[in-house]
Length: 275
Image (cartoon, rainbow, N blue to C red; front, side, top):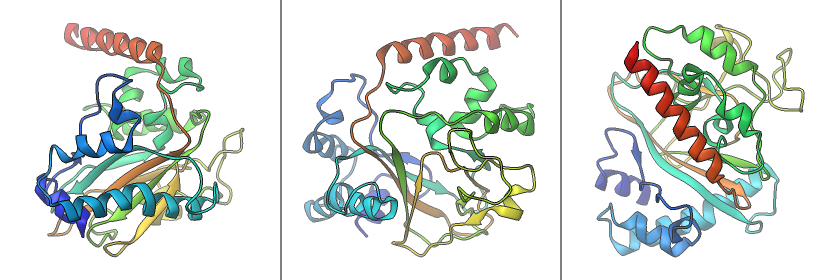
């Protein structure tokens, strides 16, 4: 209930909404302190203190305990669980994007310390777009970019992380529910390093995908290397979820990787302007 009120106060009931903009400085207190993050979070909402306290308990106690129990990575109530990111993700009535199969690790770990940043940063500009948004550039072949993306091994950092996907409204195939590809799907190619199964082709979603159909308050928890997808909302009501991502220990960003990515993005933009 507190998340629903918070989303409404941010106008997040109708569209996707990042809870608060990430601080520009890698050393900002909100990146390191729970209290500082909650103060930053509170600047863009007008919910009361009671609801804010409930959200704080959910973010830093209830959801991490659920993550620990579901993953087995630590005992519930134990472990160095760190909130990486949170957002409200909404598919409006009769709308919303078709997100291609993707892994969260490919979208979020490209600048983390301890990963192969060369592989992460040197991907083609179009593929980088797919990895970030799950949507191919206009006029480009979704199948081509997706095939390249599926073939890459997942990015891995020094500590694992996962997603807690909490429904704020009922989710179903009709309204664009999340669809997961089970990690051990029979006959599917897995990464050589023991990673999760990769999509087998255009018909994979229908043949092998598992739709995450939830009631409000239910949560789905999955690892960062699990492929998932979702389609537009074909119903007359919005599909609303709260997405929180946690790592088991601190994930630190590489300043050199961030700067290199910025240079590559600027070069890609310049090339697009010329063409």
